[in-house]
Length: 206
Image (cartoon, rainbow, N blue to C red; front, side, top):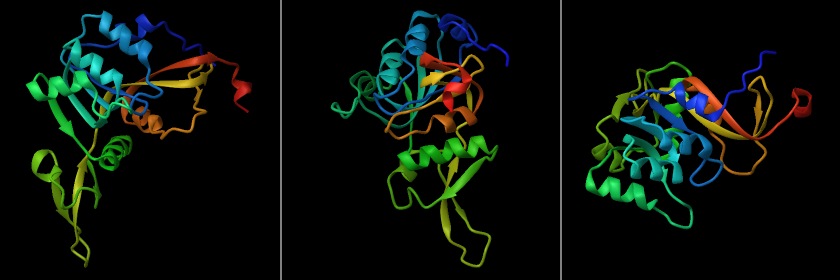
């Protein structure tokens, strides 16, 4: 098995201005903050950040490196709306693309399956159809002729995720109870990088 280990700074050196970067985790939990801090130390700019957001999104808004944020929410749990993101959103410092949490994961799944969109009933009758110009309605080609929301694919240039443990070949394992969509982030991305709490032998996964 090839050794795929890299330093945090080596990972960030693979990133470039204008990239669409998916950041895994859920709110303030299980965020790859070592990657985020390395981005903050870098000169990267004009980034599109795709995330169930928490401190990652807030810090990248505060630093001015996020040009656009695509999100299902941006929260610190006990603080419902991350304050740096809130300021950036209210002042127009970023472009914001908001989705329902269920829509968001469908966008990742569509990208993972190399589809341009997935149909869903999620969002029907909501203001998202008015506030998000990317959302469209589609009609079923079958006899029911039902209308659905077309959730566009959220394709990522890079996914950054954090796991409990991983081996040197890049296999990784999540052991927590929180909502887990990091596999969707990875499958929706052209490249993916994993940070971990502990490096283990492959046999330890069994």
